[in-house]
Length: 255
Ligand SMILES: *Cc1c(COP(=O)(O)O)cnc(C)c1O
Image: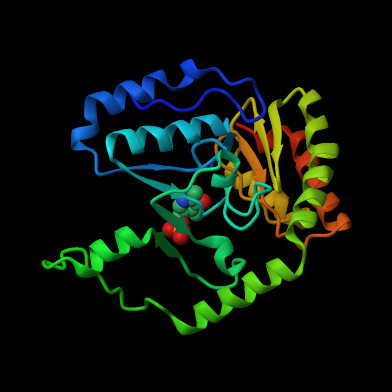
């Protein structure tokens, strides 16, 4: 049974938290090539924000058992958690990092797999070339130019300040939804806001309602969440949050 972190971001750390994972490593390390994890924020696994010590322990176990650590920063990369990369919360560095989505600010499809030079050299210099792989559209010049422009914009715009602004606004509004009878837990980390409801949403109804309210929010299961673009302004953010609090009062948006 795969376990997941239970201690939340900001809560008190307890090193017993890692025992189960440690036991899995002890038992299976000889058959593990790599360990893959979403750093700090579990996305579609439930929009959970977990303790950085857990991620640090993953790094340590990987080092101890010579297993590669792969982090999926597709959702968290480029400032969304308040650090440029979520790994920084745990002060760790992975062997392989996956990037996507915010790499281009969402303007064009592009993903990248980063790795240490040791891994890169192992792949490129291996005699069998068994890992050599060339996708048809790799290194797409247009997509790369967009990514470069997007990253330039990110740094020109003082992203730390933008994320802090969004975080502060979300804390001041989304967190008060914790008093709503339909809400189990509303939480915020950086520019990520999640409202976990007690009931699952009715996707067809809620999606239509959001569009009527002038916003594009894509909930799943019991979760309504937003990761707005960093350039969002006060008024737009308020519009998003009002839409969320509106649908929470509508019975037919839930099953
Ligand atoms: C969106 C997402 C993916 C999938 O990325 P694609 O580029 O759509 O394949 C993987 N991991 C996380 C954390 C994501 O948010």
